[in-house]
Amino acid sequence: MSRADLSVLKIDESVRSRRRGRWLLWLLIPLVLAVVAAAIALGVSHRSPRVDVTAVHPAAAGASTAQTLLNASGYVTPRRRATVAAKITARVEQIYAEEGMHVKAGQVLAVLDESDSRVRLNSAVADRDSTRAALKDLQVNLANAEIDLHRNEELAKSGVTTQQALDNARTTVQSYKARIAQTEQSITAYEAKIAVAQQDLDNCVVRSPYDGIIVSKDAQRGEMVSPVSAGGGFTRTGIATVVDMASNEVEVDVNESYIARVKENQPVISVLDAYPDWKIPSHVRTVIPTADRQKATVKVRISFDQLDPRILPDMGVKVSFLDEAKPQQQQANAAPVIVVPHGAVRDDNGSSIVFVYRNNKAERTAVRLGALNGDDQQVISGLHDGDQIILNPGGLQDGEAVQLNN
Image 1 (cartoon, rainbow, N blue to C red):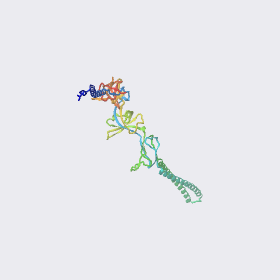
Image 2: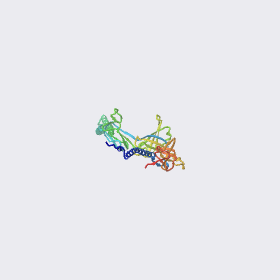
Image 3: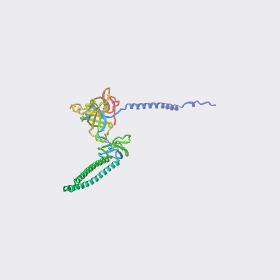
Image 4: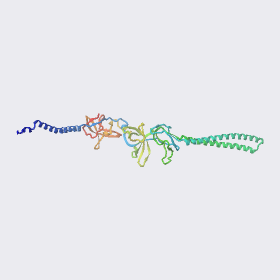
């Protein structure tokens, strides 16, 4: 039996080196990943925020520098808005009105059932024609009676006829004249009935009272309409609602404590809720001379300087009453007023600040504010013509590096 060779149990040095390298690789991979993640996080944390800027300039002289005396809210209300109704009770035969349709004054909106009115008209015409025929018969008889009267008068002069015959002839003439007068009055009465029946027939055609737009269709073909409510909900009182868009204006309620600041023809800036960036020049048309004791307000009506198809009835609107005398009172050497977007101004412990973009950094700048006109904020001091202010300051800090959006 040969002696065992123990050298076969010895581990090869090359194999041992490969195992040691594999374990070292598995230890280094997590370390490398951690370093890369830290580098990425550090780069993100030090990335400069991106901002939008705008250059500021002095406000133009005029309405833009006018001081806002009062703000109020209201609605667009047309002065001419009518629910067109029928003047008679009848069934709708045809309806031509549709929502959004432009109509002219006198344009047909609906046609009602005219059968009853036409029957009454034909009956009145027949009665008039019958009476006219009777009038002609009476006129012929009157002519014959006048001839007979003249004959009896000649005979009476000769003493041939009696006084009674002469009186009877005169009575006959007078009777025919009275009957003719009565018949003529009857014809006049029938003419009036014909006019009424014709008016009822004309009332079967419902027309627009003025130029405008139909905003509501209130009746359908086959429904009954009436100028008065018949109750029960089965009879309509209107055909369609027509609005004169040229009469659109703003109606607002102003607290009576501030009504002294409102005057006729005072300039106003109106902003529709549907178009918040659209400032519409307007002016006060009238102040209604009465107050609402329940709300302690006074109604004010405001006219647009120029109408636009986008202005629709019942739209919400916010108005700013301006003091037109303020720009005229400014000194000739007064510092120009700069206007900035209201969103660029921040409140910092009671102080108003903006961030100015200089040398790729956000510089905190204190400003003194003037009047707010819609989204335009007047800045009396702190900024200069051409300064670039940051529109979206967010949480910027003084001196923080920023990048401009492309």
